Image 1 (tube, one colour):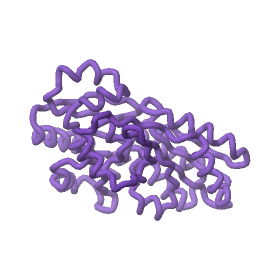
Image 2 (spheres, one colour):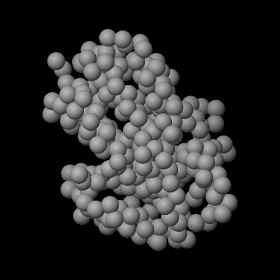
Image 3 (cartoon, one colour):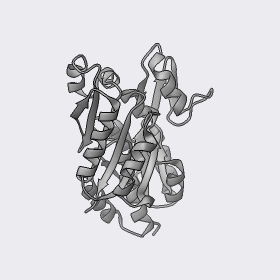
Length: 281
C-alpha cells in the first residue's frame, strides 16, 4: 500500500521547497483585489507578496479573501488517488474560514479515496507545522490513524503570536468580533494577538514597535523548549533581529522564516511580525 498523502490549503504558508520535498499538496485560496480575483501565490502582472504588502495601505478598496471551490479540492484528491488510497487534508481553523466545509464537499467526488479532513484550529505556520510533521510521519511509514493522533497531540502545543502594526485590518475583516469593539480604543497601539485552538485572543499591547517585539520574544521564551519555530512577517522591519533573538529556542533545522500569505495578510495588514511555535512534548 502506498503511504498516506498530506494535503493542506495555502493559508498554511508551508514554503514551496518544503512542500515539494515532503510531497505536500497545497490547494490555493483566493484574494480579491478590486474587480480581479487571484489564486494565492499566483499573481500576474508582477504583483507578488512584497508588492502586495507595499501597496496594501493605499489600495482604494480593501482586498477580500475567499476559499477555493470544492471542485479544486476534488481535482487535487483525484490526482492523489493515483498514488494512495488515504489522504489527510489539514486545513485552516473553522472559526476563521469555510475551508473545512469545501474540503469536505470535495471528497464526495472521489468515493473510492479515503479522505480525513482535519480542522487544524490554526492558521499560517501554526497549520503549516502540522502539515509538515504529518508529511514527515507519512514518509516514515506511519499509518493514517497514527498521523491523525500526532496532529491531535500537536494542537495544544502550537502557538501563534503576532504583533500587528495596527488593528485596523483585523477590524475590517470582521473575522474577530472583539477587534471591532477595540479598534477605536487602540488605534495607535501595537496589539499582540495569539491564535490557539481556533481562537484569536488579545494578549498584549504596547505603544512602540521595539516594546512589542520585546514582548513577543518574552511570550515565546515563556513557552519553554520548542520543537519547531517559524518567524512570520508581512514585510516588517526587524525580521532578522527577531530571528536572532529566538534562534536558540530550537534546533536550526526546525527554524524557518516565512513571509505570510496574502490571504492572511489581507486580514492582519503590512509590517506585522510573529511566531509560530510548537512546544516540546
